[in-house]
Image (cartoon, rainbow, N blue to C red; front, side, top):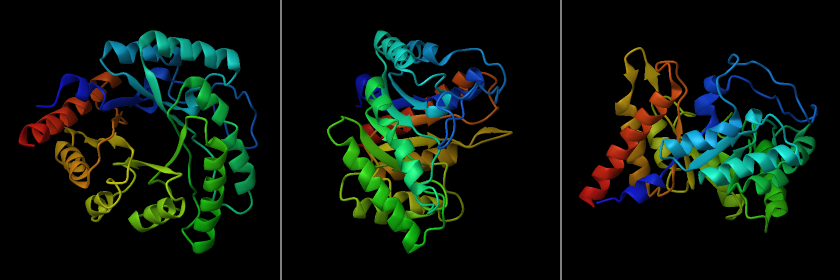
Length: 286
C-alpha cells in the first residue's frame, strides 16, 4: 500500500489556485517597474501571500508554488519574511513561476531573458527547487525554437550551482505539442526540466500528446476541468492514469481554476482526494 507520507509528498498547491482569496496581482514584466502597484484583479481578497504557508500546512500540504505576480514585493526584506513564514510552517517552495517574458520573440528575447535571470536570486532566497519560465509565444518555426533554446541554455548555465532547476511548461504557441516539447528538452541535454500541465492542451489528441511528454516531466500542474455539474472526474482521472503509465513519479500541483466552489480550498481538496484515490489504487494493484 502507498504510505501517508508518500501521498503527502506527492501534492503541492499553486498560489494561482487561491487567486480569488489573494485578490490582488502585481504585474511584474520586462521593461516594467521593479515594484508594480497592486491591481485588484480578483477583488480585495481575504488573505495575504505570507499567510498561505500556514494554510497549506493546516491542510496537510507542504509544497507550494508561487506565481511571480502574487509577490507584493521582490525586496530582500519581504522575501526574507516570506521565507521565514515558509520555514515556520514547514512548507517548501517547489517552484517560483515567472509569469511573463518571451524567449522566442526576436525584438525582445534578449531583454526578456535578462529580466528572467533577475529572478534567480529571488528563487534562491525563497529556497525554491525550480524556476519555471515561459519558453515562448511565437509560432514554432525553426528560427523561433532555436532562439528560445539558445536563451534557455544561457539561463540554465547562469543557474548552474544555484540549487534551482530551470523548467518550462507545455504552454503557449511555441510548444503546441509533444514534438516541440521533446525537441527543446533534447536540445538542452538535461539542463532543462519539464512541468507537464493537464490543462494547457485540448482537443482530440490531448491524451495521446500528454502521454508522450509526461514520462519526461519532473513536475505536473494537475488542473481539473469543472462545469456546472462539478469536477470532470473522468478527464482528471484519465490524465493522472496516463501520467502514471508514462512513468511520472513527481508531485501533482493542484490547480483549481473555477468558481464552482465558493471556497477555493474546497476545490483544491476535491482535486487532491481524486488524485489520491488513483494513486492509492495504483499502489494497491502494484
